[in-house]
Image 1 (cartoon, one colour):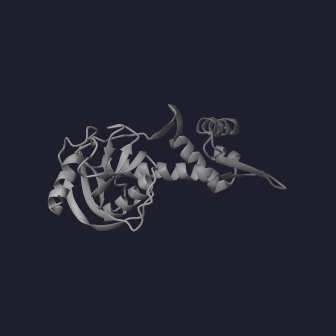
Image 2: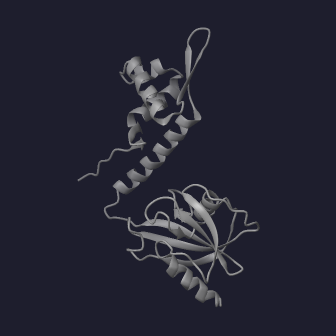
Length: 235
């Protein structure tokens, strides 16, 4: 038995990018020509150009630039097209890897505790699950990324802070801690020289909350902070 899969990106509910466009873009890079790329795929120029234009309209971004030379028209992928290709390759590697594993693996996430003067840094979640709840900054570890790099990246993306890792606080692995799937969280204690934070990425707000007056928190973050406060003998 084999596991088969297809990957495609959807934008505003519409098909944006998949295997066909990925292969077309690779060949445009190779030949520098939409016509030659289409010919190598046994596709008409009209069909190839139509697919590109359709995705550009959905994405509202230019994906292929054309410049007319003395003898021909040269086609060049934009940075947006290259980013789509890179993302597609990343997910393809992940799916290919997991399709060869005969058992379900839990996802791995990171959370960061930045604690100063009896206050802890929290973000307000912009997306489900727990949309509108406050939580510790963090997120999923990406493929080929260390957990240490993941927490510093997530802190930068969500709070705009450059942080240093003070140490590993704990690992939280209750299969029911995340309603989406079994997610193991690696929790780090962090420090930052400047607390000039601002919300970014999927954070709606950033808050330095007093530990004695915490808002309702997402996931098991109340438990994590309860354990942290006990470990520090904070009163």
